[in-house]
Length: 327
Image 1 (tube, rainbow, N blue to C red):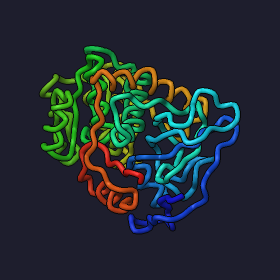
Image 2 (image 1 turned 180 degrees about the vertical axis):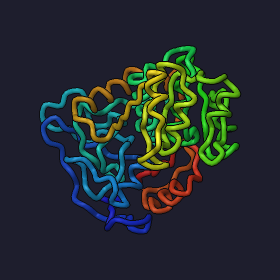
Image 3 (image 1 turned 90 degrees about the vertical axis):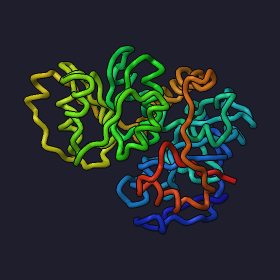
């Protein structure tokens, strides 16, 4: 089969379309013909040698999400048959024509989505749902501050917050991205001034008025988050684009009795990945089928153009997801 492989750690130029051995499903596994995948920040880090694939995933083929068709099933698999349209998350290896996955980690695609649209869903919407709802306990009427609202996870988070009756606030690098996020349900947005946004958020909602922060940037943003949160507020830390270290006022954490939770999907054990697939099927697919949620696709490129896709994402020139179509 054809796949995009990382030939060595480095920039987008180290990605190469190559011929690799076809995988085959073992007991309890499914072979999926990948029709589309999407590009994520984790793919860029893996390409640079900074985020190795977890055990069991291909070490040199990036890709965390997919949409496609069941091609064949292994022994003891009864829930899927060849031709079923499926989508979901993987530990790696989705930049390829085929991938083998545990049967219970798959979800059935929404009936109203094509492969390209479905490929833009799993990582963004599951990350946002798991972080905000399952771990952050976001409830109707609460205010949630979502950073990087123009990213794949950011655009998903805005829609999910609106769907459950919360009030999404957000930050982005440009006013254009905030304006586009407003069409998805964003209540108010701020372009940070050299990493500062707390005063602007406070001027809109009042001081100490944010219930939950979905932290997709990290770095110095965390110190500003503390200023925005109400007593007993929560921060769910998902991304570290602005850095891994920050000078934090621990007095504010104590005084406001704040909770800071770190989370990642990729390295979770199989049992938790099965639960994530069930959440995707039971809680998110119906919202796509009734139109409450919609994938946000910036552009679609062929798999062979993975280098171009990585370069675009690195330059922060996208709104929503970059999808790679697999011929």
